Image 1 (cartoon, rainbow, N blue to C red):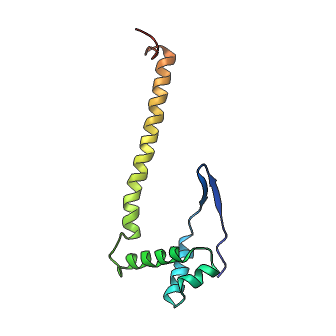
Image 2 (cartoon, rainbow, N blue to C red):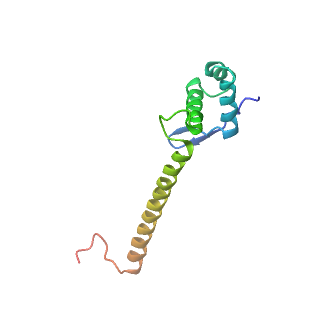
Image 3 (cartoon, one colour):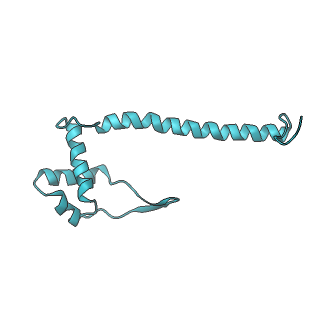
Amino acid sequence: MDTYPLEQDVSIMGKHRNPYPPEFRAQIVQLVKAGRTPEELAQEFEPTAQTIYNWVAQADRDTGKRRDGLTTSEREEITRPRRKVRQLELEREILSKAAAWFAQETGTVPDKGSSS
């Protein structure tokens, strides 16, 4: 198995790492299930041992072996509407600012600084 190449994006707040592909995660989980330790795999591959422990726990939740958290599909079910709400709020804010600008440009709304 090849090591996963480090792909990093630079964001405004610092470095952001792209998520590992699901196939890579599944292969690492299979190696743990076959007897390798997360610490061994962390030395050989890029993710930390804690990350690998998290992947194994999530895989166990997804297969029903654990019940101490949400499955991946349940997480996606929650995340999707939250992401949509954030997008709609951003769009509403942009439209509100655009409407205010057009109103000011066309003179239909007095300036904030006017005394009328």
